[in-house]
Length: 183
Image 1 (cartoon, rainbow, N blue to C red):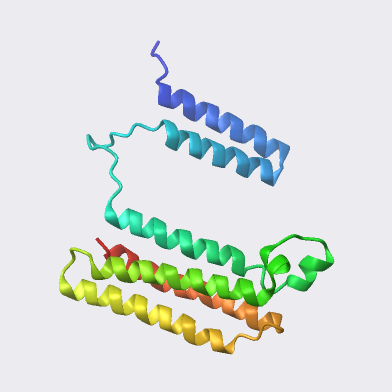
Image 2 (image 1 turned 90 degrees about the horizontal axis):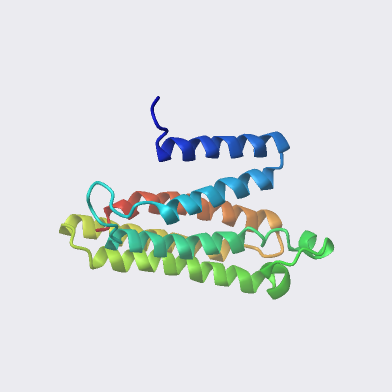
């Protein structure tokens, strides 16, 4: 009889817990379970992987900063188109509390900060000159396109603000091409 390894036992408990949560059927409970399991696994994971210590590289820090600014702006921008509905149903959002225009410009500031972080990281990277040029120009172009699009957003028109929100997702996909080039 062989002994069950610790990893096998933990995986069995994970599957059992997930099965119970799936039987209950609460989406929030399932996501809570998955998130908590993921966080505790990351917390207790061995920091030496492949006989190397955990290192926060420059590119990881730049990506974390970029995504922090950008995802915060996306989270705020998604509420801008439906302020009337939020106010009507008592949903307390920044856009309802501060106003659409103010939150819109906060979002634009955060988006531009994200592109600025990527631009500065690209300019000061140890990569070859052509990669520096591509990352700097790419992020400058994305930031300029975003700034140019702000002129065409009508705050009174939910379709216009919704279109801008969708456009920011497209810009993020473009920046995801450039971020791996930064070292």
